[in-house]
Length: 86
Length: 246
Length: 115
Image (cartoon, rainbow over all chains, first blue to last red; front, side, top):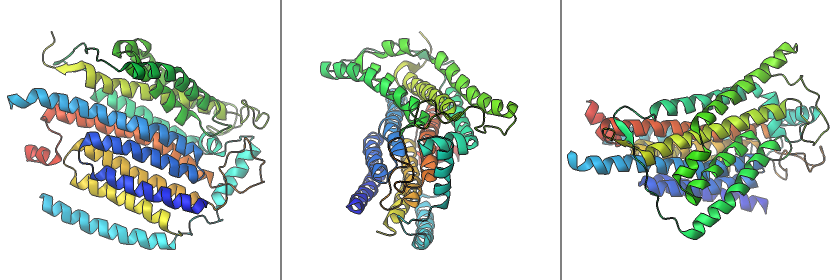
């Protein structure tokens, strides 16, 4: 039973990691990465690592996507204003 | 280097790595095996020092010096971000216009904020007993503060978050970790050795010798570091604009 | 089941590498790097797993009553998760700075600018 859960979680991780790389638009990638963060947290929980799951949940599903989105926002805002001048 | 050539290089290198990795994986001890000599010794050492959460014991007692290195990376990353994302001379601050946030979102954010902050602090405080500790709790507490950005506005967030204070907090926490290590040295044993304080009663808040102290120092450093990092990025994304100041 | 977790770790790592090499946007490349990191977490925790064992936390468990999984690799992964996030932040700060200096975040355009 536990094995089946681990296999499912592993396959979910592999699938969402592939999706995160395949999403070429950084905004969409940030959203897929937050899904990957949650799926990784689930995998770590079934692998009996609650400590790591907790930190992965906080970092992977909130902090990293947030930083990515803020960076995208900054770069895009610059691009919009600079665009016509070039 | 052309795109095509680079793709070829990645394909060859990736295939080689994949082949070697698969060969290595087939030779590794099977997943879920019963032979974990280091793990068993770590559990034994942790229990002999009355620390209920073995992972906290590994991080803040048995491998405390390694954690000092991790803290230094964290500290250096914060300094690096501060240097890269500071306001340069040809940039000025624009006042961000308040944007409409749906009322339920606003109310929910304000409702969750204290709960999330308290959870973060709880997770830090009980690091040596239950799953959690400085690293996780620090991130939770710091990100929870930013719910204020959703619940109220950027100005309110800036008021509860004087960045200079958090930068000082970051430095103080890192120093506190080093000072705890030096105290052990003065007490006549090795740097960061857990010999200074009594180990206490198993499974109580004060158990584990210096583990709770180092754990609290790491919690403070991580919380301050994340607040400062997010503040730098928010500043850049929301406030700082190019062009001559008005 | 025996080697599946290791192979998944390798797959995640290599996918991240592929994304890094083919990325047209530096922000996307930083995201791919965090996928690579996720691969290393999976590998470390897979090495430490033990069948029918529980988490190495003894606050509600009598010591010695049940086998526990390897705490050492968990401690390594735990610190790496948090420190990895701050390194991501540092890389993104560099990307923001590059976009300010050169007005683009496409690595190909950047190498044309230099050459």
